Length: 75
Image (cartoon, rainbow, N blue to C red; front, side, top):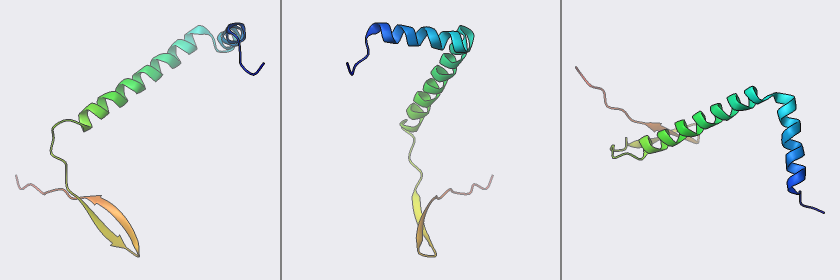
């Protein structure tokens, strides 16, 4: 009684398709896929063999704030 059968899910799928339309659902799926791909690419880029920038801490009125130190280049 507590779980849904395949027929329940098919009825829900048909109702959602009727409400939103297949084109809008396709666009949502494409946007979601693009977001997942972008997230994966960002994770790969972050885990690459680049040396990490040093992180320093700075105290302001009793609270700790993390900041990244960047070197200034004179070119």
